Length: 280
Image (cartoon, rainbow, N blue to C red; front, side, top):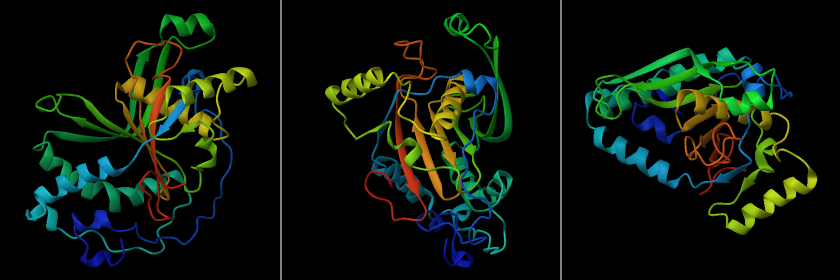
């Protein structure tokens, strides 16, 4: 968002995020599951990289419809160069100022004001009997807390009371592509490629090709999707946006996985120019 003084709620989407505190003091570190519910979740076995073109086209078409309305012409906040990004809460605060306010302005037009945004949302859901049989120590009720949730209102014609998207914040520098890379198959992966990954996992007697933070973060996202009944979960640490689409959610094909055996993934990084697929 260079020159944010003249950026509006429409034009800011085509610009980079503002340069706030230069370089977070906190570097990457390996973390574990955030709780018992996340630890007991089963991450997708494989992730399919997806082109961001379709998402970008949808967003641009939506913005084009409202570019001449007064709401879209409002300017966004100026850059506060010393705004810190050292904690997860710092990332939350900055994103509410520079990212989600413009998003809400456009979404409220699309949903005709029948849209709500919630923070720190607690969800509860019963654990399936299959999981309890596999793990006798598993809690009988899943309790999770989502950082940010978009929902339609009960009066909305676009799915009343439906969770539209879930956003999970991470401290800056915590999302690393290399932690997910091993489990990612290319766009349009063939049945042979999928079978090959299954065989490799079987031969190596490993549960996943995800590594380090890729494991607990994927578990967490899968549990969020399952508990909120929402396929779309995003992970965000200011520098990286990871979009996950749990397309097999509620498909009923395999009860072993929390939100399906496969999920689509799009990875976008602020530090590099986005490619047609996703930034590696």
